[in-house]
Length: 195
Image (cartoon, rainbow, N blue to C red):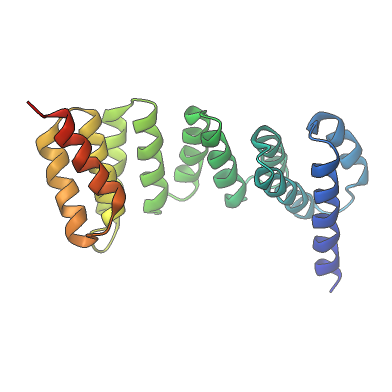
């Protein structure tokens, strides 16, 4: 019961801080004076504040709070994912990639982290690295996944290897014929190769 009350208090406090002032620098020092719990509890408070900031589309503030949460709990997976998402929302794909690279090192058996590093490597034009990571992700899953195959098609598209891009896009559509992303890739490739 004490833990639930603590978390609810943290959420209410977080919402008040986030809506009262988005200047996270001045709030951090005041907040740190109020935090008396364990590092785990402090990480939860900062994570909650980061989530609230993100919901309010204060992505830079959210990134700062996620970073503080990670300082208090370096194994807080959600903070890395949230920070990567918000970095991506402001166009800082390098930051997003760095967060997923950390998660890949922490959990090397998780294909999702290889998928995400492939995605962000594609955005940062590291196409060879993107291909290595998507191949690793695909090799780790039990059965073919349309999203993973679409990512592989996208990497081939960015490399201007249209034949392979079409091959993997078609494989993805066999799994999920209503995949709008993959259909969009095929339309784009047809447009690019129009005579």
